Length: 497
Ligand code: ADP
Image (cartoon, rainbow, N blue to C red; front, side, top):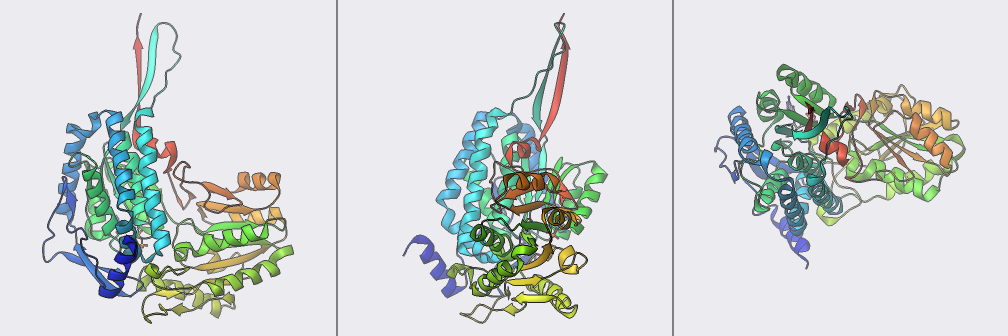
């Protein structure tokens, strides 16, 4: 058996993972959690606790921020960019070396399939590689002030950065924020979601092993109220990157306002996928399936609203329904097509949306039921669901469900599709499937979203800026723009004659 097969078999037999990090990671080392301050973490595919972790408090946050502030002032701010790059590059290599264990933990803790978890771990390694290469290329500008002046700008690191991380992409969201922050010369305090605390701690250990000086990257685990909120209020935090719900995003922004702390908010989405009659059918079917059922639909940029041209509606929806019904569910470690949803609360929320749609006469043409792991009869699963002929005012069209539920709206033509696509309070991403180049680009221009995918949903990578418009938030992560989010521009103008 390969390493990962052995790890998976051991976990499935024992329900335990040996060697999980314990405590917070502060000032370069793991701290012991106080015995009365622990929380439980669940394996959603089994619906059972598999580990405990430290419940952080304002005191833990304060120690982490103090350590990050110290490290910023004493070492990291002034570490040569090329040296920062070498450390980040080593971290990327270590993530790849430890990919099996990271993927196992992510799979069990978040309820992903192993394949999805491996993809996320690979994505985390790519983030460190990408920003490792960018450390020594953060160049400023020079300004044409004439012969009597010298004018130029430099990009200075913002300082101590807080990263509040959601449960749906724990390691990849942590990496896409932490890597550029470190590359820019900032230090970090990360607060992973209470549902998925472990891979952020493992990442901090890996960074220490790669040579990151102590205090540069700290992780405090715990709940949003006890650990997240004190972090957003802390006067020594200079920047907050928050990924999560709109409601919590508002609270974070309000807390940040008191200290005039910078924020990036990456919030929800209700992203449209426009499929026109002249598309490549197979490609569009693959794309629409992946857009909504990857990670069981628990993706802020999931394509959760299909907007389909009337001419192909019937045949396309028939094909989708057949594919959705054929998807296998199960524990992520057995590599089914789709894993569980992350928590009992999330399952209830998803089921509630679909039940209300059904009661309102919604046409549920696939799924629409809770399920369990067929091997064990346990876990929190929801069948891949399609709701056909949905109307713009329907709750399932307007609100983010964060589960494997796709609504289908019918459009008369491309312009109608564009109008339906833009009829949302969100503006995160959008997908377009058409064989016509000009139409694709006309629609891409017309859509109010931070990122548009043409003929491949989720096309792109760490190189491509990502972030939302409208209630999906503001600020951009990934790409060089993501790196600049962790910099403050200083302009210097000098009289030289
Ligand atoms: P969800 O409702 O799906 O759990 P949240 O937006 O509440 O999503 O959670 C995203 C992240 O924000 C998690 O790490 C969570 O602990 C954290 N969080 C929740 N409430 C707060 C808060 N008031 N201040 C800061 N962070 C918070």
